[in-house]
Length: 105
View 1 (spheres, rainbow, N blue to C red):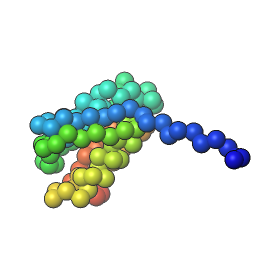
View 2 (view 1 turned 30 degrees about the horizontal axis):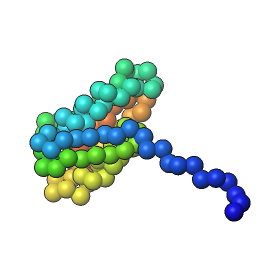
View 3 (view 1 turned 135 degrees about the vertical axis):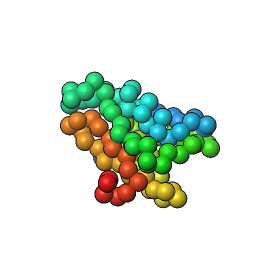
């Protein structure tokens, strides 16, 4: 057999959200644990208005990858919820804004 050896895919960090907690509190916790690479802040921040639905987790959630990858996975999952959630991220400011509308308003 010839060719380039296949490298295993990096698993990345494991992001866990236990049952009985809320999505909002877990995302805020994860953001506080994640260093801001642009130096705009020491860590990522989440803007989640009280008017935007928060979901209590009936079952644990687990995602793998970078913080940004985990956020993509979370919001892809909740885009199909009864009240969908959307997120817009600013990498330069290290801010994620959560909304219940596609345009973030």
